[in-house]
Length: 282
Image (cartoon, rainbow, N blue to C red; front, side, top):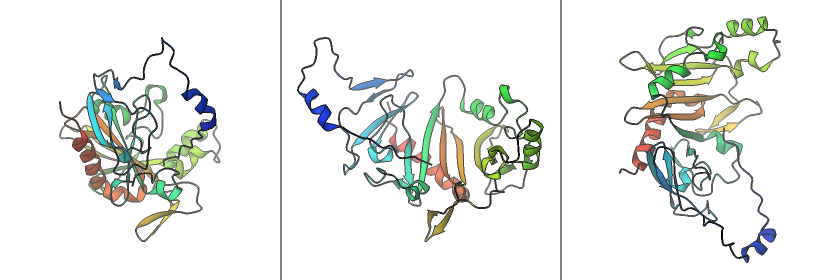
């Protein structure tokens, strides 16, 4: 889940600098930034006000695609980071942006209500190639008991997806053979995940949702009047949801509570709409 960023500003130390003239060879701050794919965005220069209402529009690039949306949609509620990287955050159950400034000093319960969204672009691999790589063990860990479909327990379709449950007995036997003790985190159900996938007409994986194992019974939160509240359990059962946006060379990644898996289509549809509706067409 999201972790709040704490900022300390020493105004008294900065004030003397405000009166200093710019040296002749000092370059002015660039007002735009262009990435390797040729997408140029307007940068946010100077102090940013996360509480501004209505929220000003901010720009961000995903590969060659330029997005423009109100700043309160960003997880930091001020726009991209200085290097152009960014994440978005919606609030459950409305799936709308948090109110301006609501995520400053983020609480645990607020983080539980957060649907995190990231968009991935790759020039080297197509989205389908990336999904294939993610559903197979990497070259450096070919014997992984969790990184492939073949080592998992295929289940009956659920929520329109095919489940591949982690085989915890196999996982534990694998790591015991490597000398890892039963008290290690990797042996715990909460540290392992079940996979839920879909395939395109060609049989290729086009959606992969990885959720905390069903054998981790206590999710670490409880529902009160339709809203999740943190319990004393340390671990939080969650899902990481990857899907391909077919009309773009993009993979979208969502993160949310495990209990929201039955709503995956609604969450996916909303994330897609945010991207498509905010895209600045050339």
